[in-house]
Length: 309
Image (cartoon, rainbow, N blue to C red):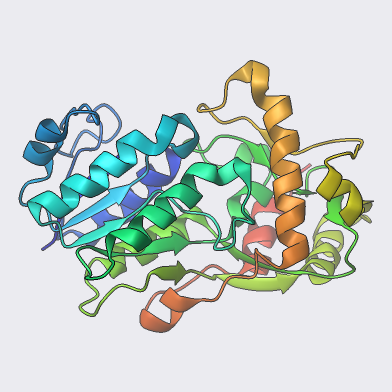
């Protein structure tokens, strides 16, 4: 059994914790009791290291789901990391849960800062084992809004299966890695029992496909062609581009009055990442945990769009 602390609790954390609880042999604390009442809950002030030390004492593993763009100066997560080292936590996972190559983007500046902090922390001697879990694009966001799941906010990515359209960089074809949020949960749950050292770069790939193949699949499932808008690389780099629509980021951590502006920033970040191949993630955890069964993209899309209007 692993004694586990979960720092921060949102939609991704909920699914990961559900998968861990399903394993039935780990003890979890620090998740809000009003969301999953079977857990032990400890309220902490992340600016108070003594309080953090008391909460984390005796923990084997800490998973961070702190909302990075709300963590000004990365104070909460840096204090969490420092306290993990202080009290002897063996394993840590920072609040990543997306992609490997962040393009040096300001959109994820705090994630980049934490990566550097952890890298420097283990020089010249390793003091904290850690892994960054990278699930790629959640295929859940390709599902119809009504089939997203009650606990997931509606997020529409750069490929919109509802209205059969896509926004893409000017490159002709790109490979993208997909996983479901449930795939991520299963991998993290199994990783807790993994006896060897965790990989720093923990890629997870349920399905990997080219954009052209995904569009063909979408047209076959939806029964109509997809309209495609392409953005020139020079326009992306200059941050001077317009599109007839943009992704939707209806997430509770993003203020309603800023969502359109944030969506455009996200679109630019996603397009630059696609152009660099940043969403083509190596399946490191797939190789280390061959017993985990993953969701096939075509099966997922067929099931979620079956009889959808």
